[in-house]
Length: 115
Length: 113
Picture 1: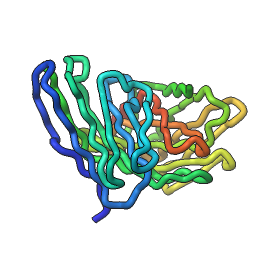
Picture 2 (picture 1 turned 120 degrees about the horizontal axis):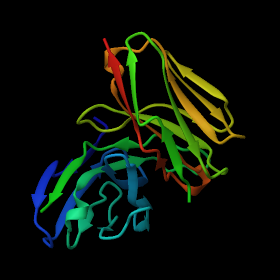
Picture 3 (picture 1 turned 90 degrees about the horizontal axis):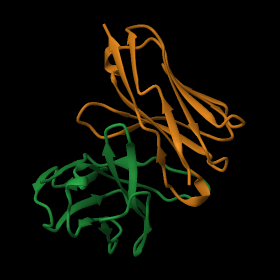
Picture 4 (picture 1 turned 90 degrees about the vertical axis):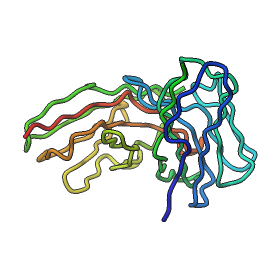
């Protein structure tokens, strides 16, 4: 089954404790992206990757890191989480077009609480 | 960068009535406009999209219209049903710049039976 998976789905942690949220897709998509969702603000892009070893900042990258060592995986790293990073996080992936844009498929979401 | 504004933020309609959600965008180079539906506790899912070379697109009870001159696009849901209750997001992107989507703030739609 074609899908985007994220782990963990729920996480409660404390300020400053490094954490990683994993994202994996099995559709051979080139493009992967991380969003955070906060009430009234919609989905805001954190980082994206257009292919292996190619990553770039989105609109709200501060406090986050990513890596893209393999095509299928795109982990989100919070080196020193703070309470303002409490949010719902979504990973998404799609084929990367230059003449057409393909549908982005979203993972199930990770609800992160930083105390 | 691109800025997308979405209105209204909440919309309550009677079952069977129509619902309209409007979005405006700032970057005239944007040329792809998807709409996502997010049910409570679920992930966003694409319900319809439109590209800049088309003015209107329909899929059963939903339709999207695009006015490039005015830089706005709208989602129309006809004959609403309780299962249409969800949060709807519009988005915009520039195809040649990759797949970066800029989302509107979302509209919470409640269909009352």
